[in-house]
Length: 215
Length: 129
Ligand SMILES: [Zn+2]
Image 1 (cartoon, helix red, strand yellow):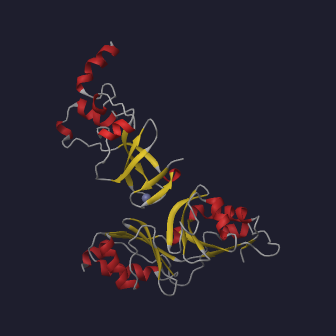
Image 2: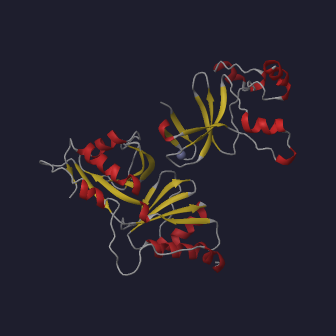
Image 3: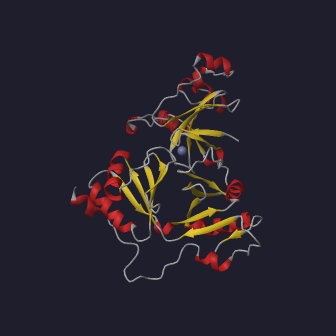
């Protein structure tokens, strides 16, 4: 472990002390576009997992695998389009490309994790980017969740092509999202901040015929 | 609609996730200071435009965002193979079976752009005068 390389990196906690007021990228959308009231049973349940910690890891798979084992107690998914969760289901690592992974942890853990990773990785060739403020996670469930996805993306969301534990970056309503399947019943969309309002309103519209429950 | 196999994502994806980025396997002259204007011009401006087998660079811009290569038939639009950067095609216009099956017509070893090579200089001079 080299202290030189660690000090070469300017790291800072993006969540300052003192518990400041924070807003999800969808705060404005919730205010401006309240969901239509569902009559009867809603076919779509849409939720936001707001303000989670998102880290993008880049580097060699072997080096990063050792580092996430040491810090998160998880192994790095080596297979393309793989998504893995820890036992609690709150922390996940997803393959994004041959040298890139998305780590999502409960909000507030990301800076501690970034530090720990930098300590373990030392002067290895790698990069860690804290993308927490840049994206948010939407979850989609309900009887008609797959129908809504079929209207929105050209990616095949049939269970045969999209089993639990898979995640892909693809086109969603002309925007780019990370679409993942953490469980049998739930889908997750990792949406960029700049697309969040658009995707949210798209989902409201696409779900209208099934009835949507946004809480 | 193409359905393209990304050699990094290891699965077929819709064409809208990709962008074409022109001819593959272009090599920058290793010693630019001692490269003739003609060689440099060829490298910068002249591209093959074969009728038949063509090797192109594509990028999986919405997926893994990696560049890779495609061997494609410009007549039939058949994608014959995709392969990662740094690798050579297994199918070329010179592959005997391919030449026959794909109905490839390649003049002058695949070079069809007039002016791209020094022996075609005479052609350029004729047309410009
Ligand atoms: Zn790909």
